[in-house]
Image (cartoon, rainbow, N blue to C red):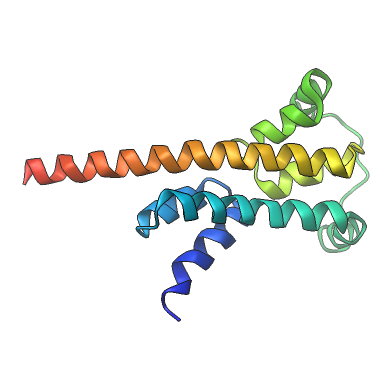
Length: 153
């Protein structure tokens, strides 16, 4: 049972905040392959849920967060609109793992009416790309720090 905990933790943390997955995976001593797989699966679980159950998610958000119907554009909204106009689903999906979270990225793409197929396709590509980059980075950074501390000692 205790062998499952690192795998589940990497998966669950990636579903909420993407960059935690590779950091925790490498920190737990998982190899790069399972870390990439679990991180991608965690993010995509969130994206699938929000994309295919968007109407339920919107009702939940409206009911529990009682959003006001304030139509003012904030600086954050303006930045998102610039990214959306410039690059569409691809751009938002690309920045989701590193700037946004899977939850926010999927909500934004669904809010602007992007096609479900496009959301899934580009979020999957982005998740694979960033989980590979971050896992490799954390792996080599962790090994380098380990060697450095052994030299110092």
